[in-house]
Image 1 (cartoon, rainbow, N blue to C red):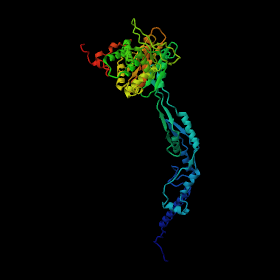
Image 2 (cartoon, rainbow, N blue to C red):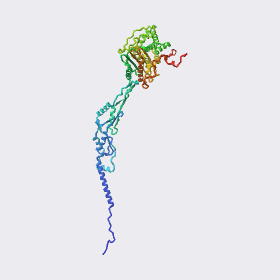
Image 3 (spheres, one colour):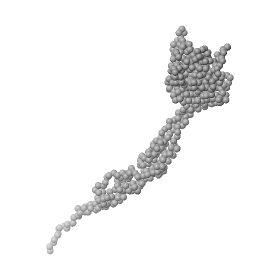
Image 4 (cartoon, rainbow, N blue to C red):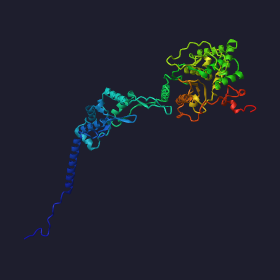
Length: 547
């Protein structure tokens, strides 16, 4: 018996590792292929990765998701700011809407739909997808008329004119009104439209012009003066009290005229027309003795000196010592210059025994008939007449016009007009108009008062260049003037005018350094031998010889 295979092991068949790995790899590739194929198939409904619609990035979103995203952006309210105040504009309120179908179709058209499915899939596998960025522009519209109406509503609600100026009677100063605002609707419309059509820049600072605050005008000053007088218990248009105020802005020509045409006793303010007429008939340098008469007349209100000046005028116009010829000429010159309700018909009363007054006929005048201040029948004027005369002297002195234009044949020179103002600038009463302006401010003025009337007219030379004429006459029915009542009122009116023309340096309270009554002229009348009409205060720096 033969034994075979004893001691020999049977061989096992080896596992097909390579084949198995190959199968597994194949299965994995097939699975990955299937996954990619499924993902690719699902992604065919999505928009391309780098696509922007109406400025909103919507890449890789489904169409409905893309629409929701841009609709959300364009439905946000537009924030409008009117001078810092926010206003929200709901786009739907002006009919704003996007053209969804148009933009969505354009977005879809951006996909590569020309190649076959498998070709596009192969490109996807190979990473060869189109990376070109696509921006689909906004397609939208709105109702322009609704936006225009919305802007009109904003204007109606928020626009405001500059507030009217007022005044403070305690400080006698003008108070500015509130600032005003006005939106430019025409300029605002395209700005708001651009915000409606922007996905992210949805805030607009509306074009608003700021109207400067109303700082008041000459009418505000007029109202303040009337209110001040009423507050002080002095009715400007009463039965027993009458106030007349004339103020002329020498820069703009604007006026305050409160009862400016009411006739008053001129008293010593008539010495201004005498001064003007004296220079009209002067054809040589003023003699010292006549300059001395002028100084006494204008600064000390000396009636005798004033009568002598009219007598000199009478001699020059008639060739005889005839004061009445001079008196008539003073009236004629004043009326020819526009002071049509001003006249003098008799010499000033010297209050001495034996003086022969006499008079000439009064000219026809037409003052305001509604008021009767019982004016002196021989010596009358109005504030607007006196203010007009001061204005003519100023224009002559400053510009070579005024009196020189009214009498163009050489009757006046600029030097003469400057001498008039220089002389009257020494009228240092410290009260009346001068008491309503700061100490040291130059004022050329002439005052006058009788038993029932106080008046003062002049020119204030403001440091800021806003010079002005001011005249105030107050009448109160009485037999004896209470200057402690009338003078402070004139000073209050003067202070109001000063504060209007000099707001940077106001007098917010009455001056407390004023004397009880007017300063005597001996304190400011130059010595005759040192009288200089071109520098009226030169004598103060030069001691009098022998003193």
